[in-house]
Length: 314
Image (cartoon, rainbow, N blue to C red):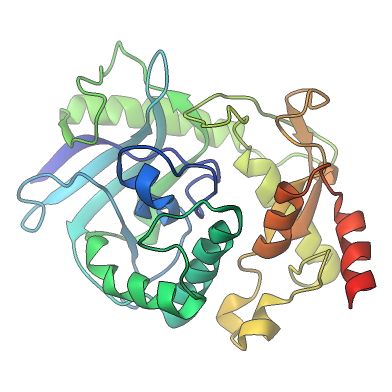
């Protein structure tokens, strides 16, 4: 018998694909450590058993014996935002592939450069962070088939006429089957309609405010996916336009092809010049380290300026 729940995830500025800086300072785990394991829930990392394994701070009683469908949300005002659906979830543990462990460790290590990590991860090498991540594999108990994780292109406000979140914290809140399937039909049908491919110069909606420490605008996942697809068509693979990092060559594994490279907005989403829409041509491909450097240096560097700076220092 399937059970239904609403579960809130910690806020994330990168679409739950990787952790981001600037969160250390709060009283909860994320505030103390600078990252939450939810940060990789939507990274689409396939584990050794061929499934995704998600971290949810709240897991309902009996999860190891039953099957669940989850609505995943993020806290926002005046209503929570729906960010995804998980179906046919079961309890399960597996091994995280080594290239993924190392990639995640590097993403965490990058946060130390701007003092965004707490004691558990700060002042540690990439390998030390990787060892800690290996030890924490058991926290990823939610096992789901890739086709059963539905990630929304844009977060959608929870319609209170269908479901009202009764507690703002991280609890597995009860939901009826009727409520779940009503939300699924309403939200996923709209999301599919909004995800129709556009031409390169077409504009994509931006600006949906969700939980943000810096009130940065919500990135459109569709424009990023489209930009990466076009870059691969033109160049054969994703690589960093600033330092030329090729993940497949760097890590010596075909599994790293077209991984970890990120889309960078030439005009910051927080800049007053940004009009709330992003075109594919506005995005540049950079590695996590160069992306962090661009966001850390003021005034904001363009990719070309960072590339020239790197060439001067070589």
